[in-house]
Each structure stands twice: as structure tokens, then as C-alpha cells.
Length: 409
Image (cartoon, rainbow, N blue to C red; front, side, top):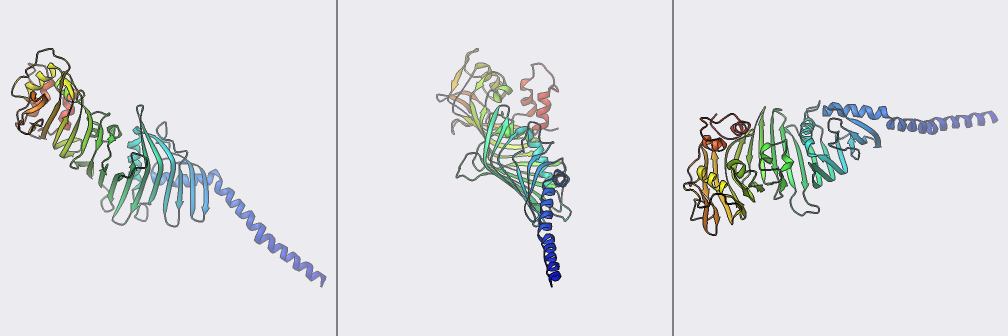
């Protein structure tokens, strides 16, 4: 009887050791392996293949079965001094095949935006089962830096949605903290049936964004000076390597420096900041196809050289100002324009009844234009060519204009 009791106790002890202690040891070993660098490296290799770029992960946690959190990321292709991902947390839901990306604050240099664009396109590529892996991103703040300037974007959200028909990457943010306005939005749509076709819609929903955000991405976004601000929307379509941009009605560049735009073209001095509002505009790649809009400001100053050279090109009469006059203040500059392959047509906008008046001072005209008569491109581009030159020289400025304006090639 005693032997049977001892045998029973030993059997119970063995069951306990196997079922409890053994299981605990196995779980502890599993947990240690989950935190081991080699295990995190396996997930990093998987993400590297998905994003087609090198990914490093320094910490991996298993929150629950099928839910994994990766922290302390490195993307060498985006790192350098451009972006810090050390505070990024990525939670992968393996059973539902999607991931969440959270970060309290992200600092990024604007120069990294083209790399982000490439990474976004990689994220939308089809996976093995025919759909892209969905993800969600949230940051309390993203601080964009560019040449000593900073822009803080609040409540930044982004994500990838995928279906059998298309993949869609969306991005939205608030330019001001605790704003009740509709956030600025960007949506990139990629049809699954045509991988070389894409559509991008951008709408600032009334927010004005610094033009330097477009530096290196779209040359026309910052074409009127990086200190300008851009407000409105664009619709971009790609078919293979060719792309086309259409501006929404009312798209406006604010704080356009007249000295770096009008005066740089015509010569002389023209100070002040203007707004340039588009009624319609279409670009074929970087080349402007046609545009209709208005340039205006309520204050500024010019000198006689600017007025004389502008009148020779644009106007029917010479300005009644003394040569050498400096700092001549005006109360209004306004001009409606239409630009297409035929040239540039202007209408003065200072007074509805005087469509020749482009720059006004106390009711009188400082500068007039020929209303509605198109100025040919050769004359416009040749405005900065020395007199007596038989043809427009192939300078860098002339070649850049030749590529970007709707001239007959």
C-alpha cells in the first residue's frame, strides 16, 4: 500500500513538473527568444523585403498572440540627418494582416520628402495574395525643417487602404493645433489593374502652406519664391512616365515677392508682396499648358527703370515719370492674365472701367497694358536680351522657360 502511495506521489510530481514547471520554462524561453536580436532581425528582414529598403529593429514585443510591437526603428535610406525614427512604434496584427504606426513627435527635413514618396509607392505595391498590406499612421506632431525654417503639423494621420480594385494612400494634418477646420488632405490612388497608372488629389481646405514644402517635388509649387504660401488644390494623373496636373479653381499663391518675380523678369525695382490666384491651370509634366488668373496687391513701390522697361514690353505708352526716380509708391497693382501657346494676354485690373491700368497711383496710371492683345513668347523671353541680339541666346534662363512655358517647340 505504501509503495502505491509513493508511486502515485511521484507520478503527480512528474505531471506537475511537466505541465507547470516545464511549460513555464518553455514560455520563458520563448519570451527570451522573442526579445532576442536575431528574432527582431527576422521581422526586420521581412519588412525590408516589403518596403524594398533596409530596415533595422532594436526591440520587439509580443503583446498577445498575433499582435507584435516593434520599436526603435532605423531606415538607413531615410536616416542621415533627415529623419529620426527612434520613438516610432509599429504594431503588427498578423491575423488581420495590417499594422499601426504611432509616434508622439517626428522631426524630418523637407529634403527627405522625395524618399517618403518613393516609400509610399513601395507600400502600395501588390503583395503575394494580390493586395497591399493595409497600415495606419498617427503622430501628435510632425516638425518639418528646411533651411532654418520649421513647420509643425498637428494630429498627422495617414494610411493605406486596399481592395481588389485599387490601393489608396491617404494623408491628412492640421497646420494649427486644436483647429476646428477641415484638415489638409492628400490621397494617392493606384488601380490594381494598371500598375503604371496613378491619381493624386491634394486639397489644403483653406489652409495656406509654405511653398518650400514643394521644394524638390513640384517645381511650380515653389516657383514664386519659397517664402510664398500655397493654398488650394491640385489633381495629378500619371500614365506610365507621363503625368498631368490640373489646379482647382481658386488655387492661390500668397506673399509672392514682386522683386523676385516681376522685377527679375522686367528689370529695375518693384517691391511688395502680391497674391496670384488661378481660375484654371493645367500642366503637362513640368510644362505649363495654359493658365487663367489674376495677380494683385494693394501696396508697393517701383522705380523708373522698372516702369520704362515694363511699358516698352507691355504697354501702349511710356510712363510719365522722371528717369532715375526711386521708391515711387503705388496704391494698387492688379492684372488679369491668360497664358497659352499663343503668348500672354493681359487686362488691367485696378479699375473695372479702365482695363488698361495695371499699376495705379491715386487714380492715375503708372503702368498700362494693351488690353487683351497676346504678347508673343519670343518677345516675352527676349525681354532680358541685350538690344541688337538677332536671336534669343540659349541661356539657362531661356532654356528653362522654353521647357516650362507653352511655347511652340
